[in-house]
Length: 67
View 1: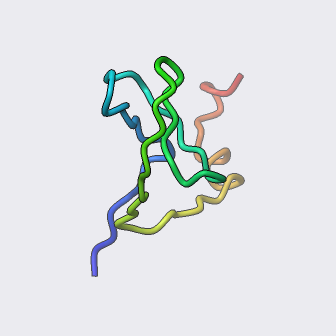
View 2: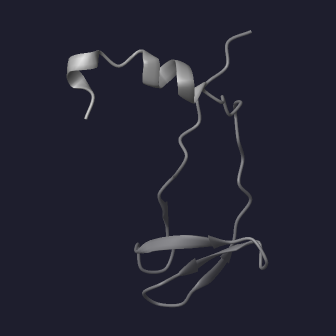
C-alpha cells in the first residue's frame, strides 16, 4: 500500500469572493477574512502524517553547511 504525503497547510478559498478562508474548528466551517462568509466544510485527508526524526535530520546536514 502506498501512502501519499499530506501538506501541513492547504490553501482554501472562499466560495463568495475567492479570498483565502481560514478553518474554524469550533464552527466546523471556513471563515473568510475578507468578506466574512462562513461556509460549512469537511476536511478530507487521503494519507498519513509522517513524523521525521529531528536528530537524524540534523545529523544528515553536512558540517560545512551548518550555521
